[in-house]
Image (cartoon, rainbow, N blue to C red):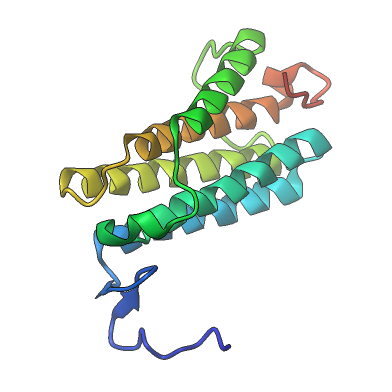
Length: 181
């Protein structure tokens, strides 16, 4: 199977399980931004010195495929998905956020760029915010019914922001060593 099907040459793309939409469709904008976030997280993961955090980022990247599939599937085909985003995954992100904030409270605004890993993680967080905005548009247009998907995107952008802080020596302690709670 070739990556180049030539089916998109006219400006349309396939959704999962059927249907074609213009490449500027709200769904393609949302899962396209999600794909960008995955790439930025991959860059961050490649730069992270801490193996535990690398593993956590990889776990989240895999979860984003569940989100992407849901965003790329027309409502009438959602029943065909093996997994969908649910409240249990949002709860996990909430727990991780609370644990990090308890150890590393945000006291002031921060400027990204202390090191490549934190900058890449911050970039991933901002791209997720764009995916979240597109998902909100999908909801407002009646094309997204799963409120857990929006909550997950919101919490995950917060969590990546906090991971970026952990990767900065000034906020994680002067050793610069990242430790997950």
